[in-house]
Image 1 (tube, rainbow, N blue to C red):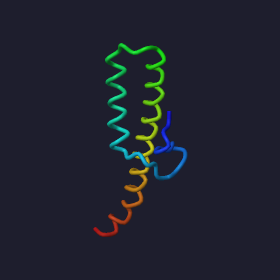
Image 2: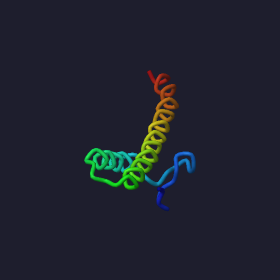
Image 3: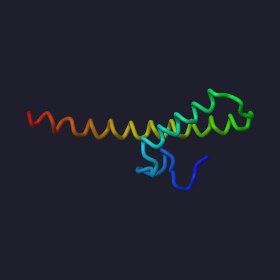
Length: 79
């Protein structure tokens, strides 16, 4: 489930959820799933949310790698 304040990784170039927010919520989802005691529907909803958050985190990490790669040649020229 996506709330209006979020965007999917395939959508906007700049999701409104930060990497840190997505990572923390993903960790919470994992804790809740590991704790058990949820209905099947609750577990599935959390799993789907976790998948979305994992994609969002991967999006942020990919963007960071791109930025580092773009900056690397500039850093080599300064040496």
